Image (cartoon, rainbow, N blue to C red; front, side, top):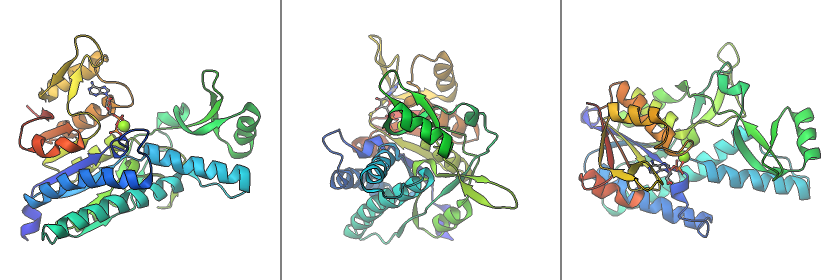
Length: 321
Ligand code: ADP
Ligand code: MG
């Protein structure tokens, strides 16, 4: 079938890049940001790429949790567990991307269907990340509330530099994408799939093939990399808030890069001073994993420059050579 011969791109969209700035956080604002990114993805589909879209959800899950906390505190509403917040965010962000992309493709007369797949990502409960949860989640609490939740709900809580108490969860490695076969099948018949939102909902196999949601977060760049590896993607594109990657980022000798080899990427990562932990470092790590598994090219740029970058005019290209 012709569709299976198409080149496959995995495009990972940053949760932060869907929020232009702190004055543009409403659902409508996020919809408009999604529109800009999907316009460029429509260009890729128009020029013959088969596209799987992954996305982040950090700020969006933060909003869902805050709503849940406020509704619980003032109205006694039930709270939303973290895995379900992840599912909610996949649905809402997926909807914004899906509808925008469908509208744009329809406008161009391109008959490609788009679907959002609620995706679970398998994690290992033995992952060392569970021994030392570090990822802060949700709002600040006072000490009494933190202790109550620790005792009654088994939360891990930490005191955050005098600002109050916060819940922390683990960020384990993604082991397997549960819906992988479904995603592959959809792509093979020409459907554009939005999946692994927020890195996927973390689930553990609790025995005899029974999956159960886990209160953890998975790095979306690492999960998108796993997807790109499993799909043997021709291109792994990370769309984020910067046009290019820099070495010596934020220092007087900062230097924006047009191109990096796999060996250079590994060296810069090892030097530990170039890519901020928790933002750029996991992206480079994700790309190193993709290239080491045989991937050929990866690209990091921002939504507005995807088109120019695809023409080789900008962005940072990371290549396997
Ligand atoms: P996303 O939501 O797309 O994952 P992040 O904020 O996690 O976004 O990561 C992207 C951010 O990483 C950029 O906006 C930039 O501020 C920061 N960053 C850290 N180190 C670098 C670097 N070496 N080069 C470019 N950007 C960097
Ligand atoms: Mg990030």
